[in-house]
Image 1 (cartoon, rainbow, N blue to C red):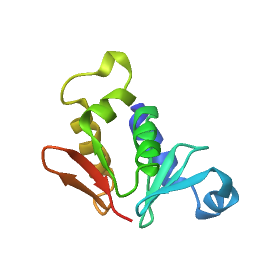
Image 2 (cartoon, one colour; image 1 turned 135 degrees about the vertical axis):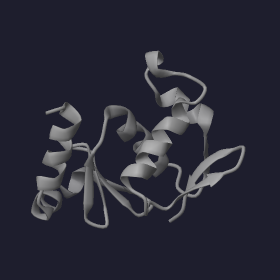
Image 3 (cartoon, rainbow, N blue to C red; image 1 turned 90 degrees about the vertical axis):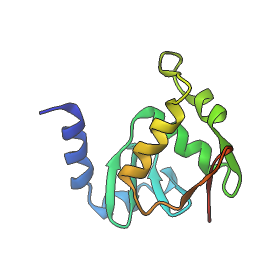
Length: 116
């Protein structure tokens, strides 16, 4: 079993009670709830284990609600060996794939913004 599959299975097994127990370690990014103790995000009852990079991106968005976050800002959060001109797009694609109802919107030629 691949590590991604194992992490996905773990995320699905995390009961809501565990989320409530670690209130101090949660933050929201729009309508997405992120637990930074266990690096899991949840939206509408669907949870996903985050990579360290995905977590850094969500933490950055949480500090910039309602503001445009540019591709270069996201690329600045990435590890040195993963930077390519389209790295930010790939990470945003993955986050949107995990959470299709996430209230992030694309600002053409500028970046992304989280509403709410």
